[in-house]
Image 1: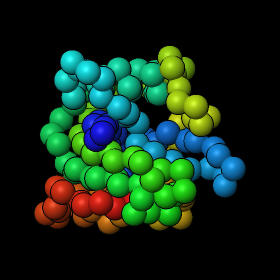
Image 2: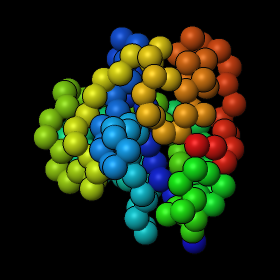
Image 3: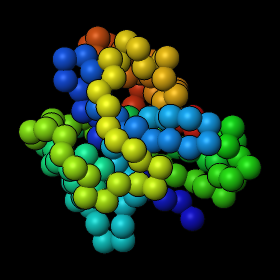
Image 4: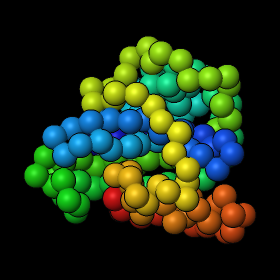
Length: 150
């Protein structure tokens, strides 16, 4: 079964707002967002997920990127082998400030603003997303579909 996930790209002054998570390997970072529920539109999914993970609503802008993740093809195949997820990344405007998450994910320990120029030094997923994101903020044309990347 293919799962849809909707993600927010929130950039302020060259920094991107990310969800800070922790597992056995240490800290890792993801864009806010998550899985679409049956009967839910992408905007409703993204609003719900942002409230759950950053405690704030967002204004949803244009679709910037689409990424597939087919777990058996990547480094975490041992536990992600059956995962096939399509992620839709939307440019979003932040409404206010980060508040207490209403329903954080299992590994979430907080949020963090990270300079986009330093993103490559963090354990950020998907890594293949960094270069297109840097091109986007520099006003360069980027592909929307990134492929099956991690």
